[in-house]
Length: 234
Image 1: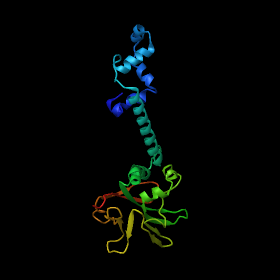
Image 2: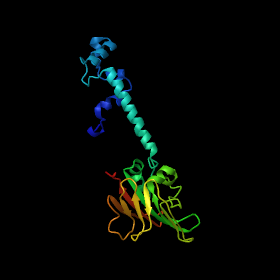
Image 3: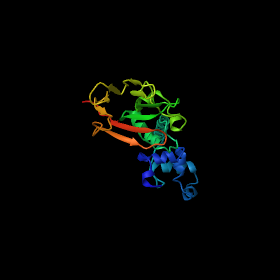
Image 4: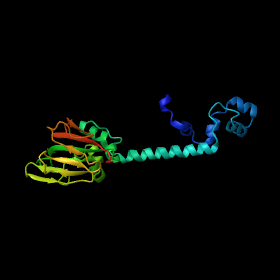
């Protein structure tokens, strides 16, 4: 086993052995049993540190580490379950980009705004800005990550426009306030750190702690992701 693969704080011991007796037996040699002629006595000597070449570990400490390792395993499994992208085979650039940002948007480290231009089920061209973090909390993304469903703008998103019907809507979300009446075009104010995100493609920069990422994808007509690293206002 490589050094980097060994769990910290001796957890490798408790994950390798199911019981404390198994741990003790691993340090007992055939020669020990030959001379002692008593397996239980051999275990006691190992526990006291008189026999064996491994780490001296009392039963209470082994059991405590065992419980901690199991709790850590269950916590990691629970975290994986909350990520809709976990375990999915992703090939399209857009889905890969969503997966890369999922954990950060769920935890609040990042709040991404996704611009999508494509056609709806009626063949009408639509476009809009989606608050990714908000959608993650209100929508099941499993069908999206497995390719059974598209992520498309809705009238309830930050901004939505139907090019055929010329229907236009805008809505603030728990993460962003829409600022539509200004000379700079459409702006979004982050509600946590109050920073302004400018989605004008001609703008030199989208704003502080933000970056614009255009994506090439076969799934949509156009996709641009605006990533904002959240900073609390002090």
